[in-house]
Length: 89
Image (cartoon, rainbow, N blue to C red; front, side, top):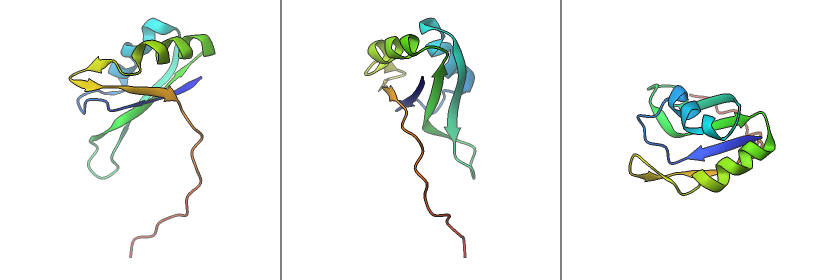
């Protein structure tokens, strides 16, 4: 199960994200999304669990939890929508 984790403190990196969620089950991947140009965190990421049960438990306990003064948003990740490619002029 792949989860979206939003409203992350900008200081959180992918290793921190994995640690935050590893107590709920086997994390197969954890990635904080960063801005291409600046390399700075965009404040959200994705965590993938080996089992759906672990993912559901993580949602129950982490959605709305305080982390660094910010309330996390945790839910099942939606599939990425195809968007037209942007071209810089």
